[in-house]
Image (cartoon, rainbow, N blue to C red; front, side, top):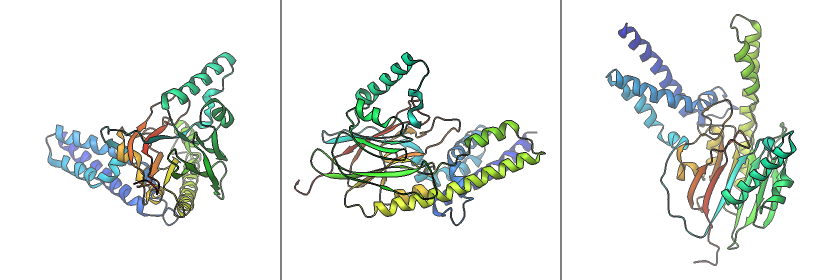
Length: 354
């Protein structure tokens, strides 16, 4: 019996390793050419967990096979560090600023039928924004309550369009947007922001196309019967939606990157990519930039608290001209199904500074 279990798990381990290697390849393949590999990148966190589980399993059986999943994990070390942070704290100088990216889910939690409770929730949110986070620039996606945020916080300089916004206490000297064709509710805005030492940075707030399959997936799981035609029809519809969204995200990411390449100022890209870090979209946007979590984050980097576990889909990508001193993912579920990401960045020197 033990022999049969060992053979079964050996084959399962091989399947997990092959899927993990396909995940490593997926960032190099444009979904417009072949979208199927994006599935493996999306499942990276679960594949990572399974590889760790197999390491423990084989060690408990006193088998050398544990070296195979261990080697697989180490082979993708650069991918691992985008999802698991190993960075300790660093001394933070005085000349820094804090920037947050946050998919606020329309701040739906601020709406409540009980007016007294609604007032309390709103007051709690603004107190948290003003006192606990201490942020200087806020990039939001699914941005409800824009007027209330700018009115009730110090972040009264704004740029916004179609559910994406940038709020800051610093002057905005120029702003604009990037049009995403063939989509509704997804967009990108940018703002050139003058920092206290008169240097200027360009900040992007982006929300790439959602797959829109979570509701369909939940329904399919509840009613699934492999012998029913409706089950297979539902599965085909989910795959079709996923394919369209993956292709559109790749196109949108390239539009943003083309714009970034024309910036005369150091850039910071903030937003909800709706993709894992092991993805083509992430690779396109990260080119020539640094991932703030990868540089200064610590712990498991999940940013989504919804029904699908293990997702890291919110990012902050930073120009190498800006030092990254700290990056936190605040595990706050009170206002949204996403977690806010906060980075402490160094203010770049101006041309007149030595």
